[in-house]
Length: 383
Image (tube, rainbow, N blue to C red; front, side):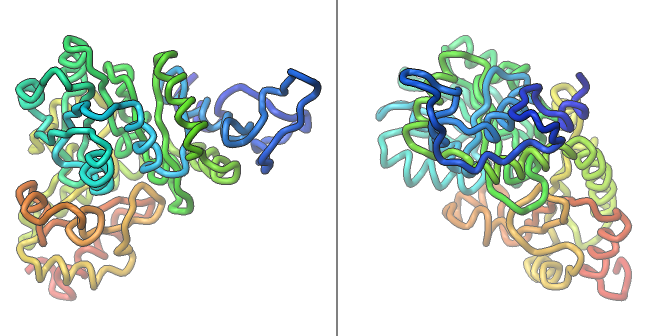
């Protein structure tokens, strides 16, 4: 079945006999047993709910996995994932991480006894030299948030398999439409479902997707025990959002490329970070491991004053956190998504007061470019 068809029709499981085109919202906390020792397959919604099960099976199929678990947020998914590890375990992670992941690792996971090395994973040797007997996993984002660095998933997978390590890939930016990390050798795929999978900036969700039965069982136990599951109504919102995933991403990618090209020609923009530009250092790897470049880009203005001016002048594009929705959003990482990262670390990775991140929505490319133009130059054009 083609990806876009699967997005629309989801998994093949049916839960009612009415012929309803929309999957029912089973807004029930508990389910009656038909007899002693018998079950309908559903007992308590913390363990499983029919609406959530339909969503999970759909996401699993989209990623080419065995099982998917839907969480109340992306951070709930990562937090549960960290429970697979024990005090003293060591994890190597991408240094240009989403700020929430960095905050979790440095303030919560460290407190719980886990150890982290944050490295530039675009060079696999940077991972290899940090390996030690306590190393249990490698955690990568590709492309990264917000600098859009690209890591070779297959190359990192080979290193992990040679050293009996778990490979975790955050696939939020590209989704399974453009990138399938499990097929490239990853063990766990992570999503903030709030973003492209939901697609409408109206709910929070997270996912873990795996292709190993043992890993699925371990995560299901943690999931049931910690209770971080996605609600039935939010599960339905994600099912609805996924129906248009392919068509949204096609449009968003096309517009993102047009905006990236336009920004590259502006004298108040000093750098544009978009993997779809041939000048991007990860362009060739992206072509090898993905089927598209996505709708996210970052860019650097010529000064802090220009960055502030742009943020205050945009009108169609909204100055807000998050990404992946139908509305275009512009974010100031140093004050928003990455504010909790120490300044010296943040600036060393290029996240300074001139860096802006743009999530391209479904508006007209011409309208978005005009909004950026008037925000940068007012009525004076490119000056």
